[in-house]
Length: 81
Image 1 (tube, rainbow, N blue to C red):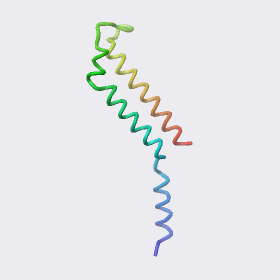
Image 2: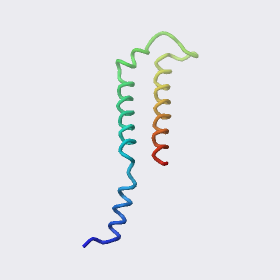
Image 3: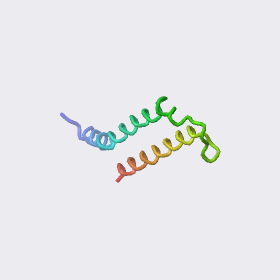
Image 4: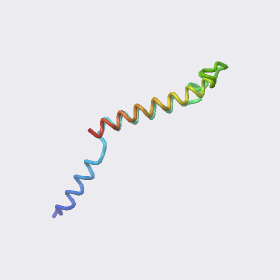
C-alpha cells in the first residue's frame, strides 16, 4: 500500500526539477562554451591588436564569459516563472 506522505514527497521531488527544454538550453549553452573556449577558436583572437589597451584574446574570453552569464540568467529566470 502506498503511503500518502511518500506520494507528496514524490510530487514535490518531481516538481523541483527544471523543465526539460530549459535543461536542454543550458546543455546547448555548455556545448557552445566548450567550442568557444577551445584552443583553435581562441587562437583566432590571439593577435597583436589591442583594444582599450588589452590584448584581443583577453577581450574575447571575458566577452564570451559575460554573454554566457547573461544567457544562462535569462534561461534560469524563465524557469522561475
